[in-house]
Image 1 (cartoon, rainbow, N blue to C red):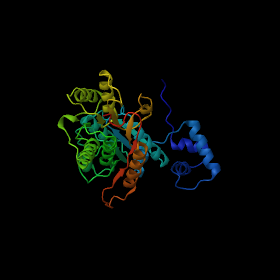
Image 2: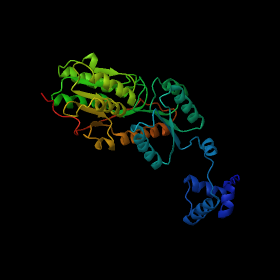
Image 3: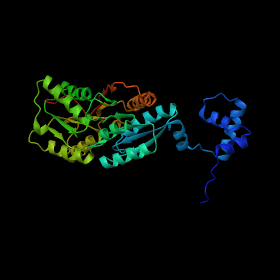
Image 4: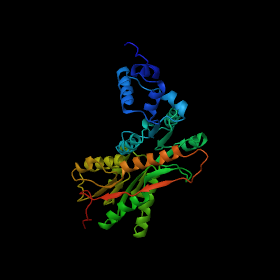
Length: 341
């Protein structure tokens, strides 16, 4: 393949019949240029397929107008929706987005953060992986970061997430209101803030309702489908199994449903099932699935808006960390029903 011609701003100016300063003004939008000259510059840029050197511009201006987003598992349907919300807000503000997947690996996460830092992105939205050490790394770099969904165990960070304690309460209140007392909870990985907080909401509601939290009904661990399957089998094989099961994320829920199907248990006649996260496929199961819906798009949008404030904030200005918590919504469908005596 022949090497692509590398045209410069001077080439654009020559073809458009204007000065290089006029071309620069058109690209930066910081000086008024007549519509006729602006059109000539755009036509010349299009004819030459001219792309400004983003690295050179960032060295000159101190800004790249790009941010990084690092997520722990892009196959989890939750994260693409968050990314979409952030990217739409970023594009509206004139920023581009570089997306990285840490694959739940702390070393991969650190490599992504280092690469983004070396590429001079203006800031990062980070959903921490399991065993993340990113917070310590980013403190040393004094770099704009907003932690999204999965949050570091410190209040000294800017964060955006669902109000997961309240989300856990909503789920538990719903099944208790249907008459269930033997309630199983797949709590997920308790080192991750969403799962820790949902379990806290579950515990609070059970205690306020004077219901026992049985050790055999409470299972924590990892957050993949196979973990939900193993936990579901374990709960359903108990001598006195729960009549309702809450699953702390969508992948755990899928595993529980597989275990239920293996044992030919009828939902909701014999077992009520509720998950966190609500997607299109929840309406296509039979029965349709009750879920606590997270405001994924809003989480992404608010995360970028907070990050942009940090980026534009003068270096010498110090402000207290901002913690944004967005309410979840209970969506009742056919997988939960009153307890049958």
